[in-house]
Image (cartoon, rainbow, N blue to C red; front, side, top):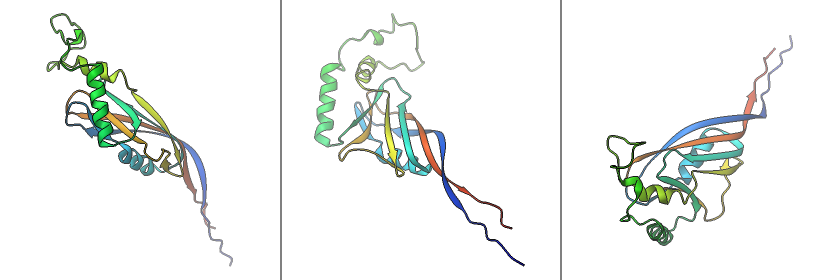
Length: 170
C-alpha cells in the first residue's frame, strides 16, 4: 500500500479588513503617537503587502505624519494657538445663535474645529513585508484639540495576506 502525504502551499490572497482602534487623549492640543498601535494592528491582521488608511472619526482631531520630538510638539502647539487662539470669539461657540449639531454637554470648542481643519482626517501608508513603510523619523500622530477624551480611529487595510492551502491526504 502506498501512502501520499499532503503538502501545504502558501499563496498570496487579496484581502480587505476594517478595524476600529481607540486612543485616549489628555489635554488641549494633545499629540499622540499612534505608530506602534497601527503597526501592531496591521501585523496582527496578517498583511504582507498593501496599503493602510487611518481615519479619525472626530471633527476636533486631525492626523499628521511627522517627527515626534518634544520641542517640535511645543512648536506645533504654539503654531496652532497663533492660527486659532483659544480665547478668540468663535460663532460656533455662540449657543444663543447656533441651532444645529447641539448635544446636551456642548463644549465651547470653535478653536478646536478651526485647528483640526488645518490637518487631514485620514492618512494612507504603504505596507511592505508586514510592516508600515515610513521614513527614519516619521511617525503617525493623532492631534486632539478638544481636551481629553477617548478617540476612535478607523483602520482599513487593503492588500495581500498569505493563505495556506491544505490539500487532502490520500
